[in-house]
Image (tube, rainbow over all chains, first blue to last red):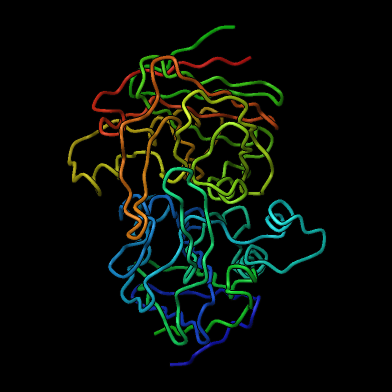
Length: 194
Length: 194
């Protein structure tokens, strides 16, 4: 089984056939990987974080959960998770996010750009890219104010997740570009398809 | 200013021009209203709950916040809120939600169907309808498990919100169909456009 590397602050897109298992590995620890997927047979069916958290009754998706599409169809079965903490509330970091939230004026690489660029090879419009499944991302919400806070990922070197495709998918995957999200340093991500 | 009624378990869709203010009123109290909007000039630009909570740094959107599109453009400015608690995590209740979560086998009216039906008049595909802004909906997330729980709305009779359009919009709006979400009884919603 070939292991592929997503270099720091970049992304990849690939086909994942029904029944195949995608393993996403955080090789150095404390590195987030944003995942977005679209039906390989219909570009208008895509991952819905909102339906996934609703039907699983938790904002913290993990092993045992099913990930759903905007049409409420099962897309991925989460079969293994050695980390246990991921996010499904936030949209991928984007150039506009760095401008609006951080006041950046300069270019900054982003998951949004890396997903858009790679998914474009499969004719998937960037407008589809909504809230992603942010693997290893550690987001807290304050009980009464709802304030979001980004904590260092809980993933240790070698932690991984396995997701089984329940339909033919195009998957976009990144090594997240936002220093703050990744405990101060952006690192690579590795993945395998079995 | 004409006030319109959305009867219990139904919906509406309408144009909201840039600069106009939409007032959504909960006339009897404890009634949720799901809102989704799309650019009137480009059906591929729609409300993004994920970007809105990200850029406002809270899951509890309210007065003073700006609501963003999937392209990170400002869509609505939240100018007034007499209730103070709304949800932006959950997708609208849907026939599939009632089947998957509640195990329903029979038909049940839903916000998803009511949004889809009304937005179809403006050539908006139901695939666009992702996580909605769920006005007056009271959702808690448990700190460590992330478990979602739906509490009775905090809205009292006559509570309202005002949202100012920052671009020309098509707005879909419902009187939510899910008994549990609305303190046991589904009631009407009223709205005005000024």
